[in-house]
Amino acid sequence: MNENHCPQCDNELQWQGHYHCMQCDVDFKKVAFCPDCDSQLEKLQACGAANYFCHSESCNELKSKSRVRFEFQKQA
Image (cartoon, rainbow, N blue to C red):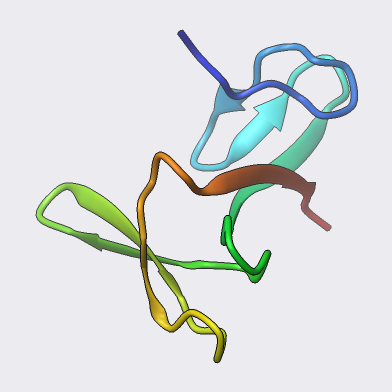
Protein backbone atom coordinates (compact mmCIF):
# COMPACT_ATOMS: atom_id res chain seq x y z
CA MET A 1 0.00 0.00 0.00
CA ASN A 2 1.42 3.35 -1.03
CA GLU A 3 1.19 6.01 1.67
CA ASN A 4 2.54 8.85 -0.47
CA HIS A 5 -0.47 11.05 -1.18
CA CYS A 6 -0.54 14.69 -2.21
CA PRO A 7 -1.35 16.93 0.78
CA GLN A 8 -3.36 19.22 -1.57
CA CYS A 9 -5.56 16.81 -3.56
CA ASP A 10 -4.89 13.40 -1.94
CA ASN A 11 -3.89 11.76 -5.26
CA GLU A 12 -0.99 9.33 -5.23
CA LEU A 13 2.40 11.01 -5.69
CA GLN A 14 4.74 9.77 -8.43
CA TRP A 15 8.45 9.22 -7.80
CA GLN A 16 10.57 11.07 -10.39
CA GLY A 17 13.77 11.46 -8.37
CA HIS A 18 11.48 13.50 -6.13
CA TYR A 19 7.79 13.26 -5.31
CA HIS A 20 5.48 14.82 -7.91
CA CYS A 21 1.71 15.25 -8.04
CA MET A 22 0.49 14.88 -11.61
CA GLN A 23 -2.90 16.42 -10.74
CA CYS A 24 -1.53 19.60 -9.09
CA ASP A 25 1.73 19.68 -11.10
CA VAL A 26 3.68 20.30 -7.87
CA ASP A 27 6.91 18.78 -6.54
CA PHE A 28 7.23 17.73 -2.90
CA LYS A 29 9.95 16.55 -0.56
CA LYS A 30 9.24 14.06 2.21
CA VAL A 31 10.45 15.38 5.57
CA ALA A 32 10.75 13.36 8.78
CA PHE A 33 9.95 14.81 12.22
CA CYS A 34 10.80 13.50 15.70
CA PRO A 35 7.84 11.88 17.47
CA ASP A 36 9.09 13.19 20.83
CA CYS A 37 10.15 16.82 20.22
CA ASP A 38 8.86 17.59 16.66
CA SER A 39 12.34 18.58 15.39
CA GLN A 40 13.25 17.79 11.80
CA LEU A 41 15.24 14.55 11.61
CA GLU A 42 18.34 13.73 9.62
CA LYS A 43 18.04 10.66 7.39
CA LEU A 44 21.03 8.33 7.66
CA GLN A 45 21.25 5.75 4.90
CA ALA A 46 23.75 2.90 4.75
CA CYS A 47 23.73 -0.63 3.36
CA GLY A 48 20.17 -0.19 2.09
CA ALA A 49 18.75 0.67 5.52
CA ALA A 50 17.39 4.09 6.47
CA ASN A 51 17.63 5.41 10.02
CA TYR A 52 16.59 8.75 11.46
CA PHE A 53 18.55 10.84 13.95
CA CYS A 54 17.28 13.72 16.10
CA HIS A 55 19.90 16.41 16.76
CA SER A 56 17.84 18.38 19.30
CA GLU A 57 19.32 18.86 22.77
CA SER A 58 16.38 17.06 24.36
CA CYS A 59 16.79 13.90 22.23
CA ASN A 60 20.17 13.54 20.45
CA GLU A 61 19.44 9.91 19.49
CA LEU A 62 18.26 7.55 16.73
CA LYS A 63 14.51 7.30 16.24
CA SER A 64 12.56 4.28 15.06
CA LYS A 65 11.18 4.68 11.54
CA SER A 66 7.86 3.28 12.77
CA ARG A 67 7.49 6.23 15.18
CA VAL A 68 8.69 8.99 12.85
CA ARG A 69 6.09 11.48 11.54
CA PHE A 70 6.42 12.19 7.81
CA GLU A 71 5.16 15.29 6.04
CA PHE A 72 5.24 16.33 2.38
CA GLN A 73 6.48 19.88 1.87
CA LYS A 74 6.11 21.79 -1.39
CA GLN A 75 9.42 22.44 -3.16
CA ALA A 76 10.20 25.89 -4.51
